[in-house]
Structures are given as C-alpha cells and as structure tokens.
Length: 212
Ligand code: ADP
Ligand code: MG
Image (cartoon, rainbow, N blue to C red):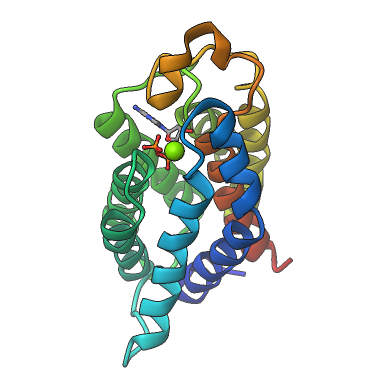
C-alpha cells in the first residue's frame, strides 16, 4: 500500500499487537542485562497509543499527525530510557513526513530523522549495544535500496531486515550505554531489548506497507 495516513494508522496498530505479543520476551531480555521492564514499558505505551487513536473524533489527516500522537503518548507513558528515546524518534520522524504519502526518499528521511533523534537524545553510537545498533543498519539499508529506485515498501522491507540482523548482532557486544552498561563485560552474550523492539517496530512498518 502507499505510505499514507491509512498505512501509518495500520503500522501503529500492528506495532501495538506485535509489542503485546512479545511483551514477555522483551522483558526477559531486559531482565538479563537491565531491570526487566522493557516489554511492560513498551506495551503500556502502545496500549495508550491505541486508546488515543480509538478516542479521536476525527481521523488524523496526515502521516505526521499519527507519528506526533505516538511521540507524545510514548513520552508520557513509557518511562525509563526507551520512552524519551522512542518519543524523540517519532517526533523527529513526524517533522519530515509532511506529505500526503511518503515516496521512497521520504521513507528514508523518516528513518534518518528517527535515528538522529535517538542519537541526539541518548548520545550512543554503534557498537554500544543499544537500539542504535538496529536503527543505524536499518537506515543505511534503506538509503541503499532507495538509491536503486525501489518502492517505499521495499525501502521499509530492507530497513526491517537490517534492523533484525542488527538486533541479533548486539548479542556479543559489551554495553557501554544505558542500564546494561552497569554489567560491563557480563552484558555480552545477551540480545539488547531496545534493538529487539526496534526490529519489531520496523517489521510492522514493512509488513503493513507490503499488505501482509
Ligand atoms: P530502562 O533501561 O530505563 O529500564 P527500558 O528497559 O525501557 O529502559 O529500555 C532499555 C533499552 O533502551 C536498551 O535495551 C537500549 O536499547 C535502550 N537504551 C538505553 N540507553 C540508551 C542510549 N543512551 N541510547 C540509545 N538507546 C538506549
Ligand atoms: Mg529496563
């Protein structure tokens, strides 16, 4: 489907479903190297997002309106590190999606803006075992695929696949940002929860764009 407001709504609702399905897994990953709340945090946020969407009197007009609603809701309900990080990501993404429907380069710009927001907020770089290790390869893959003249849905599919690989690749890393960094070397051997939730969010984006 075109990356229009209907897609944005479908993406967000799909994300809420996937986060709910994987709530226990995300918290278990966070229990290994953090405080065990990432699944609960994300699920609380996306349940609140769906509640706000259901309560709207008029449907949002643009993709940006949907992303802004997600941003403000996550910021006020998720808490922890992930709330402000994802909130900033969706807010920055909203700023670059002022069109009725995103073409491939606008889809890339949305991912770039989200990553920039996360980095501005959390000051992590790649290799520190955070969600940046999923967002960075996702954005790079999206840029490459868009440069080859691919469709917006293909851009999101490439981003999702790269985010999944990036999340897997956090397993051997030693955390140097966030709560997991308190464990030092003992953080190695575990998958980062935030990189994992990022992969689910981007897979939801790709699947809804592909009509799956
Ligand atoms: P908290 O660590 O406060 O309990 P969550 O458990 O909800 O928050 O989220 C943890 C995730 O946040 C980590 O798995 C990691 O991906 C991400 N994270 C933590 N600190 C940073 C940071 N500085 N930059 C980017 N991501 C971070
Ligand atoms: Mg936590």
